[in-house]
View (cartoon, rainbow, N blue to C red):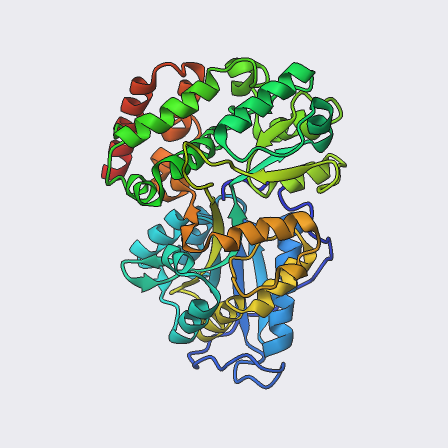
Length: 443
């Protein structure tokens, strides 16, 4: 997931100091046991992730639980958003970390094809098969080799709203279909509360709008084909989704500030436009991480704010789309055995429980009891995530080459911003998207 900002403000801020000196080993990891009983006790595994702040603090508690269980010490390094560059530099300098939490499928694929990764061993694979649906192990597989264990998930099919604004506008229940969403947005606008806040200044938010519409309308098989560029962006299914999205973009009344207002609104501001001190809208779309932004505005999730699933489009199923972070093992790391032991621990329900109890976290582990989550909203998000099973789809743009799906001012981000400014030109948008996708996938 690209966004970090205040996404994990829900996590409990408990400071953990984790540090030790690394040492190598080629021993086969034993099953985790009491501290000091494992043959690997006293060794060290180094871990890197993009996480900072509350996310880092919470994950360090997971690492502390791993140490308590196995006697293997764990150190943590935050790379910031430049993870690939940092990892490459460390490998080149002969100081590679052992485990990296990869934030995108594309990162796993890139690392694997550069020869940087060790396959996950048979024990990790067996435990992952027991605790995760096949779609999640598939996300971590490159060329039929299992490299990435998904430990943390993001649910990006959630639409957030102000219950007070709904009540004041006379809306008794959240919408279940796309037409109902547009109708409720108009009702909110007519009531004076404002309709939908769109953070179009951040192009990635527009990709998420498109992906939810496309997944529901075209279905998962077409979604997979478009993701891999097996069908062009001029395919009739894409034209249909862009037509649906364009009709929404063209409705200047229900989008706060119209298209130009949306293009000058970043993601955090779009959340503030609904839940801040001077609300301009009743609805904002984005993932489960919106909860962190809401709490940073001194509002209470579940009372001042709530969510409903992204509605079904044109008779399709409600989409369930998102992202996640996967543990991969660097081949150049100093301790392969300790690294495999850590990833095996992350595959366990026990590890997921540690972070889930702190909040600000969703686990793709289907055997995690939702009751361990600290609030009703997170339980509902987790239930929707797990309930999708193999119907869950990973964020499409996160799987594309970065030149198309992950670069500000270029590729899909820019093309959809241009479409927001001129939503009547569906064919032109599709043609531009296809040209940029073809170039990026070819490159």
